[in-house]
View 1: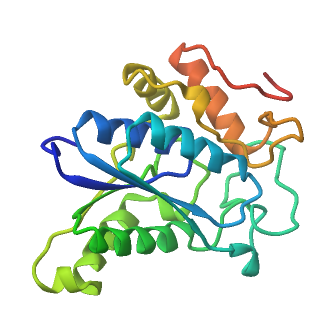
View 2: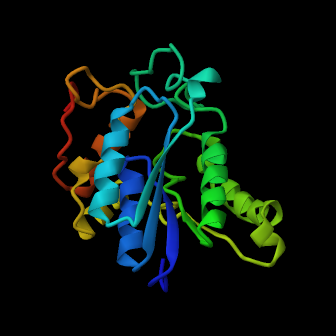
View 3: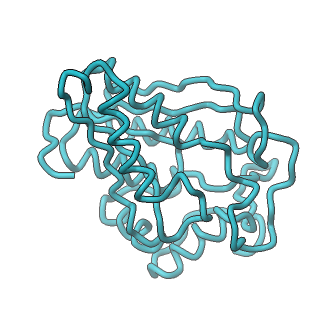
Length: 230
């Protein structure tokens, strides 16, 4: 993300490691960061606290926490009374997939971008080390960028919205290394889908497994407190 000095970038900030690195890259590019965090009543609500810490750390000029109760829809272990899988990475889209989540979130982010007269949106999707979610694929990002031109007043006027996905082709090890390069404290971020009552990462869900492997593969000390499997 070059040439962003002084421009406003809307960063979709979940509070996870990936979104933290995206916010760090936006800061490095010199952007004015407007962070959007969606409080969708997710099981891992501790990530909202992480998002607040990250927004402050990168000097976001605005941090909006938008309530959107997706438990009313259900359909996911993150939004319904369904156990989070702990038996290893699946070879199909897991039950932790939240129906159309990134599509919903990018739509909200696009609305915020238009309201703030911004053209650049940053999202931390990844197509390599991820859990098989269809809304993390490059063709989804490209498709949404094209849709943004058709679905907005600004797009109708010829404004070109850009959906930046700087981590798209990075491994989790690459992302952990990038956090270190940016001088960001990875302990600020949260990945676990099923936190323990005392505030630790469970260590066994898909997200914990990917996070722990990423730091190990990068040869970087993992600051995360895992309940098991550390």
